[in-house]
Image: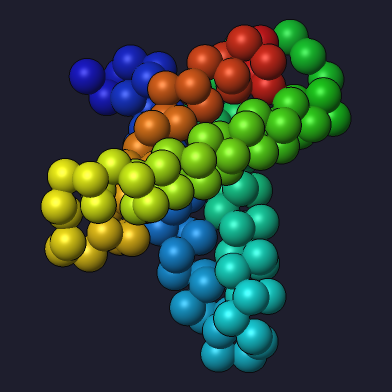
Length: 129
């Protein structure tokens, strides 16, 4: 299963998420929390781009600068999806069903998972076509 392009995409995304999370902790030792989050996000995104280009979408026909631009656009769309799903869950759906255990954590986890498929399609069709 790890040989499939989608499985590799998920593995690369998980690796980039670990880089993002871990580097935020390190950056917080030297800078503010907000700046640490921003720097970590950028490092995670750069990691995802490089790993996707090397291991997932090797056969691309577009120039590097176009790949990078589309990568940012697809990730901005994914960030909006994550925010929308997380807020929808935490403000409406979870309270409606009486969910009280770590609602922000659970809503964010679902919000992060939802754009995996749309991000894969976006990167396959635009970033690395």
